[in-house]
Length: 181
Image 1 (cartoon, helix red, strand yellow):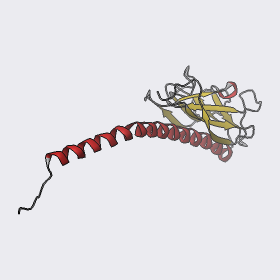
Image 2: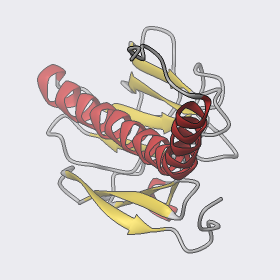
Image 3: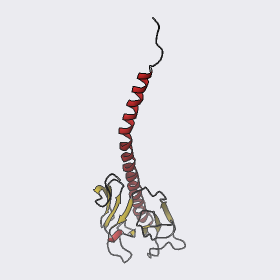
Image 4: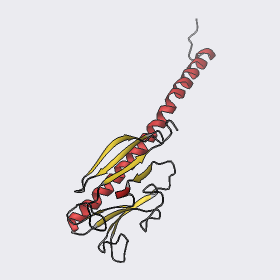
């Protein structure tokens, strides 16, 4: 009797079929996991930028602004915060990066597959912190609102800013996003 050292053709084919079935089952789950991870990372980056702005305002005793920015140099974006944002010391309290004002952070996203980021009316364009860390509009009124991040699978995150500048993130459902897209 001889010893067998290899696989028969039938054993090899059955193994390949099992691998193919497992891969077909796992790949959609992996895609969903990657989309969730993108959403979580972008949420954490925005929360970190808000914390940076508030902490810097308190430590340096100056107003600091986080604004939506499409080009990474100026405030303003028709797409909300989706293309990116800018954090800077706004010593003039005019919402513009003026000469001599320190830019603290620039974040630009060229990846079209990332989540959309929009703010409600009070935080649609910017979030500003005064020297005490309170969120204030450029006119001086208190500023509170929600920034919503919506991913490709209908899942989202809400970053809520209260009147004293505290930031909180929570999970939300984005109803107008196609589920499973």
